[in-house]
Length: 148
Image 1 (cartoon, rainbow, N blue to C red):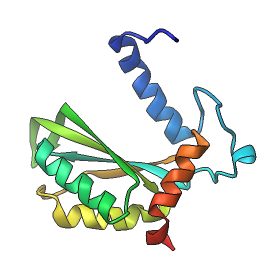
Image 2 (cartoon, one colour):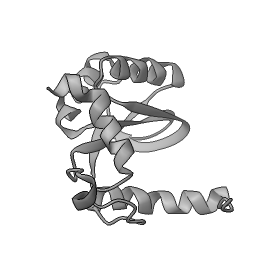
Image 3 (cartoon, helix red, strand yellow):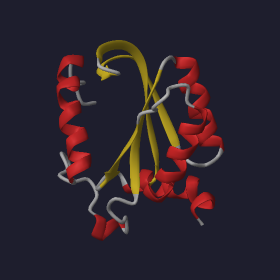
């Protein structure tokens, strides 16, 4: 069994991994689009911040039930520092990482905006250029009926 990296080492890799998703440069070339049939960018990872875990779980469950997403990771205890109405703010928030078809991002955004408590909800999405083909295929299958 491979040894696990210490938490600090894994956290240092996170920004590189996210940048790789956005740029299409893979840290590990496990599956190429030509051999898998995956269309690069047809799946997206969307990111939404929420004021607390209750709100995040409610939104997460709703987007999965509506088949706007295949999976939502709810990541607790992040700190956001931002400017709002001319003042620097710092808040504890919860981050959702939502996996969906790229074609569903506009519908996902509209739904999140309609139920989110923030005046301006953060909804941003990055296309997934490469990844584990069975997982990417599953994302398409789970959200298929919505996009058809």
